[in-house]
Length: 360
Image (cartoon, rainbow, N blue to C red):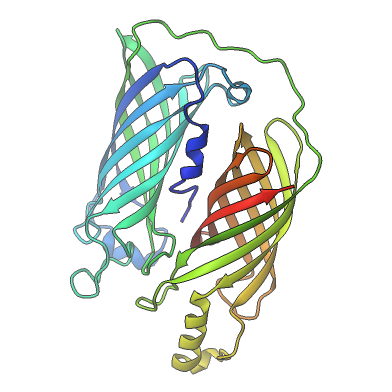
């Protein structure tokens, strides 16, 4: 599951624009659930449909990073999706989103991250066929790439393109096979402002490179193994790393993680007693240590992080030695930072992590 996540840290970049210029758009989706895992083949029985409503606030350069990203929009959106299968049910989601523009602002790329409610999750008696969603609450991400034409008729415009909608609970509760809906989209765009679009403010080139800084971050949350009913357990991660900002947009990270994943205690016990052919030692250590290389994408005090790691201490085999992390962080002053991230092994999510850190 891909989680920039239900991402409260991202809200820190909102509300920074002095000019209040807003638009609304409404989009219809029609597509198919992708067969990313053969275990959900029995759930793909019809074409899902969705309706998306969005409120957007434009940026015009009150912050220098607006120019670096081509003056993006930020906003909030809500989606209603019928998954096209009674076992999968229906999803209602709310998101924070960001719009980037290309080709003279006719092409829009949107990324939305939020939380969805599923009407019919897994139940061992009432809905045992739904192995995609193990809980009512899901993390959800959507992407759309649309061509739009503004003010075609007075303040009304149109848009059309493609989209991808992802739902998963990031192994907070099993099962968690997740779904990805690929869809064609079409919709309308309405400009709430009677005046013409203001001019964009231009900033002079600047050098934002920094010396190397040291960081210590504590991450935590709850998760469950893929064994249904094995129980939810808290986990704790200590991350120590160095970072170096190398320009206006990018920074590099190098560090180490120590993982205290309590759900592995139960998984080790279960496999050692129930599956002797796996030859799992009941006394195997549940802790892991990894080294990682990371990248930061800067948007003011808000950053998007991507990290690729390798376990150097790996006493129990779980999903392989390579792991990855993607998330969002918000810096508060010179030293403190908080964020949310998704830790995975390839496309296989392990946990949603909430973190708090200090930077020297």
